[in-house]
Image (cartoon, rainbow, N blue to C red; front, side, top):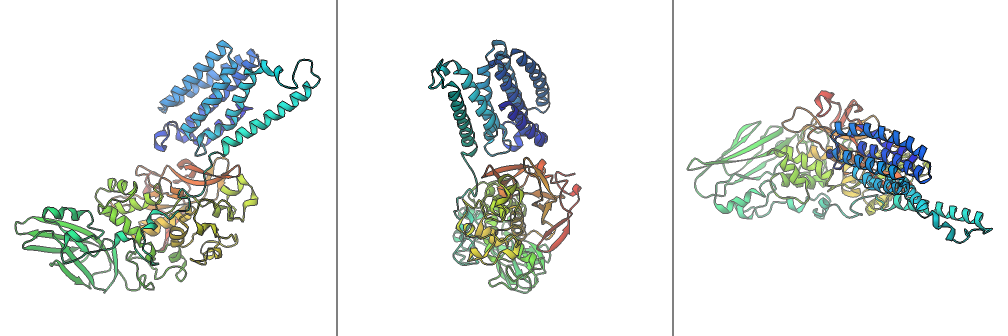
Length: 635
């Protein structure tokens, strides 16, 4: 039974993971899932051979050994072709131990070897579960129990009820058989259920980004506030776009620092915009302000302008001293039509110039509620991205990685920061909202845990209090299910997009469509136009054991300097973006034997390039999805 189960698991994993051969390094494991499946198959056969030897059935063992050698050679060739050298070494070890056990007739030892080795192999290969060794629980327990059975066989007669000649021996055998089965089931259950993992990684704590907010409902993070702007007091400034550059002022070097306006700020057309510079040097200086849309707009260190053209401006400040030395600083500045985001008071600091939105939830159109590009309460995240990309260190790895991959392009840097902060860093949203899938009866909840969970808010443990107070009304969908920011019991935990501020600022979690909407919204607020940041979805994908899933949402993003879109997938804090092609995985939480289990979903299951819907969308409406040749990794 242990051998049959290992062959079944190995075959199933191999069937779903053939594309992973040779790509183990991409997924952060010693072995690819496919290589682990091959080793599972060989260990299963080795265990069966051990059982045959221990049962003194050498003819059966020899026949199985011939099959084992043939399959091992085939597997070794396949692993060598794909340069799975660690798997090759492990397979050779399995073959040598099995051959030695066969020659020596040490069947019990071969059972013990097979039973124990499968656990580290499962962890090294990561099959379906975050704890890969769990996939070997059934086979491992059965093999080890069989070893105990054969190893202690001669001592059975010393057990109570099993003495020679005792009339109670049949009952004793029945009792010990029943006890053995109980112990086997308990051991398997313990291995499968401990440790368990579900809910959010932050255990209900406020996300790092939210901790920086002020108390007001539309407040920005404290790090985004400009303080101490006293004439050109470079030593006392803290604008987001000059936070790191101001350090050089101590040396008295000529610097060009744009103190106002802040990077990626948007203003209504006709509203005066204050331009202020700092040179960090005394003496006669010449200032030149130039717009990419309007040409030269000023020649003083401080002035106002109210006649800038609508659109995104690249503002370049050049300061020249008496020795003809010069320094330059640049920012992006948005000028929008006066009606854009006009129904908000205060208006957001960051919003796209090409959006049709004037308001947010609950008064805006559907697209403007789902993608709340006008929401001031999301500005703090854009401010974090700006601060990072201007050189101010941010907690975590997202900022450092964004700076390293941006090529000194601030717009590109902002996107990479936001994608990685929502993705692997889990800064603003955490985990996968399995409770939403349960409420709406989706496969990751119902197919493995039972249809009885449909229409319930199961698996809310580990998230914050707002999540714990949600109700479930399956007949509602998306925006119609969100009714209150203060009374969570009025809101239903169904699928479909909630308002972005609700998933990011209140729930701090979501399913794929929520993550995609959050990324689209923040990229749009951070200076990406209507065709550069899109949400889209697959028409369905296949999951091992779960089968076909109705669909999956993610993003299409055009980074500066690129001529192709990147597929971006931050679901469950997945990889987010792979600058070499499509994302290699995302995380979601599924149900396994009655408990929530975090599962890594690989790119070859999703079919990013083959199953993407024909329509993509954002706050500006629907767009045709770019063709494969325009998507990185799909041509």
